[in-house]
Length: 108
Image (spheres, helix red, strand yellow):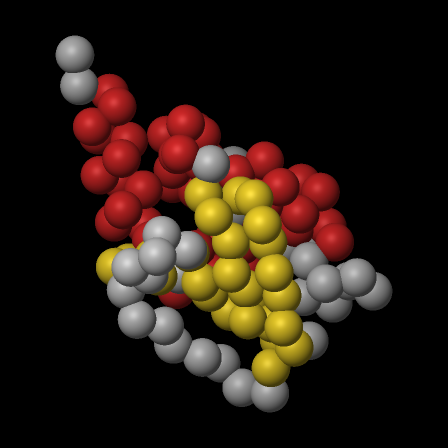
């Protein structure tokens, strides 16, 4: 199924999440790692701070495995809605925002 997802990033976990998204560790997760990474590349951060994206998932409960292995560690308030076709969202690219937060936190 295809879902529209909305959530709030846990700010102090941004550097770790960015590292895991870019070092291949999440992408290597089976069966859904590549889709998680692709979804985060599609994600946008709205003016309200919410991160929104679309994601394909075949779990009996929406994003069950994705939440248990990745998403619940980095987001709060995850909401899902079944949709018929991919959506695009307004806002800044999430990966750019993650990279900027990571860079800012790593400066001395």
